[in-house]
Image (tube, rainbow, N blue to C red; front, side, top):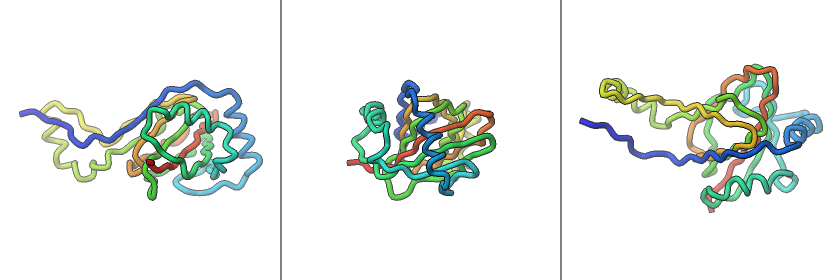
Length: 176
């Protein structure tokens, strides 16, 4: 008897280089726009971005050229300090979620298998076959990286444990 995995989910991780001045831009944006929003974030700062004024659009386009064609409909800045995190969430009403990292994340982003809740009965027999099953994957992203995944994929961000700031820009898009 052998086991197989079916119905894989597309995911992209493009290694990029840190962009000089991007962290300073983000911190200045937060200073200039101190009233953030509360979504999935627990603590930390989130604020919508005007895509017409976003200074790093060319960087995102360059990094995402291997992705399916998409149009960005929404973007926001995330700034986390020690103890800040994001609860499990998805991005409804869009096809693709992208995250561009301005700082290292120390494996803080977790992606959940959307089938995991219905699969628990299968895990034990598969473990006996020697297959290692996990309902969560940790991503090791560093400053400059861009990731993309289907917007229905549940994900969350672990509490920030460093004394430094953790910064990313998130995007919602639709395939064209």
